[in-house]
Image (cartoon, rainbow, N blue to C red; front, side, top):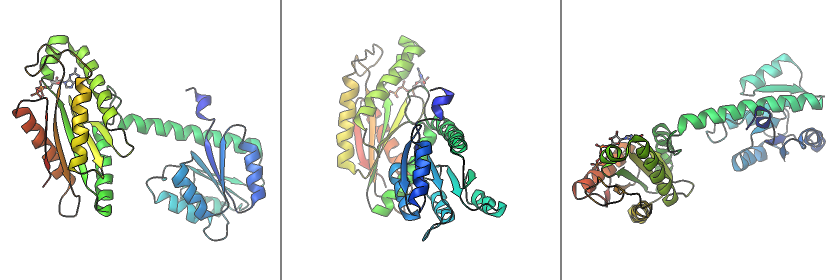
Length: 307
Ligand SMILES: Nc1nc2c(ncn2[C@@H]2O[C@H](COP(=O)(O)OP(=O)(O)OP(=O)(O)O)[C@@H](O)[C@H]2O)c(=O)[nH]1
């Protein structure tokens, strides 16, 4: 993607209580972007959460929830906190502009505005937003396999833990380790080892691909899958599929005592998150069960409840 691409084809939400103002902005932006609109603050928040626009153009003065309140509500929600907001308003005092910026807006445009200036400012903010998204993606992704990294996993675990505790739903984790991977590296070389990790990661991704499921690289050749709202029975289904999917890669492993192909061992645990336990309990349980799977022959899963 080039610099200029970063500034185009955004999803822009226009929020204004006057339809004619929306129409003018829509006219200014429609050739470069996908435009959504809302006639009040409540609707704007709903659309922001459901459609995750790249940028919001927000009127300050509206009946009911005004622009400042909308901005504060956006900033208070982690799902939409990073969507940049540009105020577009008939207010012109420096205090109004200051208040908007203090509420979290990234820019402030006074009406009447010039369409070319609005387009240029939207392009600038869109570019910044996309650069920030790309940076964030980099900090959360494992470079070799493209799956989530440990930091990303920790964030997801905290969120899902709280979500499952509130909803009184279970949370399952599967810890996965490639069998005799040191021998694999020694036999085939480190580069082949890297390639093996990539293929095993892709295979595992196919087994746990529903939106709340998360596959992460937990350590060198150790992976973890988090399965929100899944109990032990569901996790066992995923574990069986994982073993099968890795076997069906048919990757030769001449230095394994278990099989002539690459295999994995799994520790499968589930827990009911609450105030009386913590994420570590689930990880510890999955890790102990993985250890047991290794001890009892590898190329298998061991399963149990977290305490
Ligand atoms: N190629 C490659 N190897 C890695 C990477 N990260 C870790 N490893 C290797 O993974 C191996 C892990 O070996 P061990 O933890 O001793 O375990 P193992 O040989 O898999 O044996 P078991 O787990 O007991 O079946 C080490 O040799 C690490 O060097 C990586 O990114 N690329």
